Amino acid sequence: MQAKKTKTIALLLPTLNEVVGFKKIFPTIDQSLFDDILVVDGGSTDGTVEYAIENNIRIMSQLRKGLAAGVMDAVATLNTDCVIEFSLDGNCMVEQLPELVEKLRAGYDVVVISRYLPPAKSYDDSFVTAFGNFMFTKCIRWLGKLPITDSLTIYRGFDVKIAKYPEFARCLEGPVFEPLVSAVAAVRNLTVYEIPGDEPKRIGGISKMSVLYNGWCIVKMICRMYLFKWFGTKNICSDVVTVDAVKDHS
Ligand SMILES: Nc1nc2c(ncn2[C@@H]2O[C@H](COP(=O)(O)OP(=O)(O)O)[C@@H](O)[C@H]2O)c(=O)[nH]1
Ligand SMILES: [Mg+2]
Image 1 (cartoon, protein in one colour):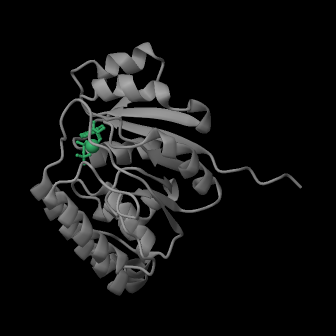
Image 2 (image 1 turned 90 degrees about the vertical axis):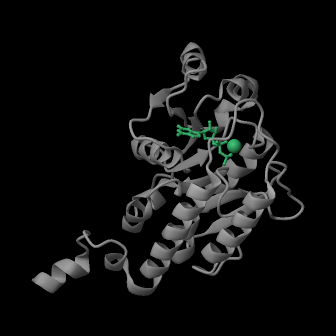
């Protein structure tokens, strides 16, 4: 009998005008950890795309607008079992990639580098983002059973099957990709492993995140996920034909 193949992992690098961090951080990444490396670019004009091409890094330009849409569309093109999201702006520490890879290969569905699991600390949070992250993580953790501490960070790996569940596409509206991965994992009782890890301050460029808009989209997503938890798929979007709905009409 053939031995079971270990899980394959892609490193996904979303970029939008991130050339400073890209040049500084990418050369320090151990590329041998991954089966695939892909940059998804949101329309950079600062040399990010040119740098990727010059260094033979696979890059795709996203067609839809926004970080979550770019990540979703890039994940859909991957042929690997798992994906790790990594931000090249200095917020993610390269040193933690080997452990992240190891835990994914060990079989966890989601592995998160948590900024709030002691002794880790975020050096990039403002009072507002720290409060928002705390509240949203509480709401998301009550969807399931695991005591997760960070549901919003981009720095995570997960099984790509999560993005293929029906409730995922139905709840992905606006910038809610990472909290949605955590919410789906909670509702479905998937295996989640958290590794404490500091979030250093970003280097170069500016954050493209809008606190109010992101917060509003996450509130809507969490409400939909509670509806999904309590009443099932057909209640989270009216134009979806579920197996139940098909049965009703037969
Ligand atoms: N492809 C793509 N990447 C983006 C987009 N917006 C931000 N990014 C990248 O995603 C990462 C996280 O974004 P950032 O603005 O730093 O968010 P923050 O860390 O939550 O403040 C950075 O590496 C950005 O360059 C986008 O619309 N498309
Ligand atoms: Mg950032």
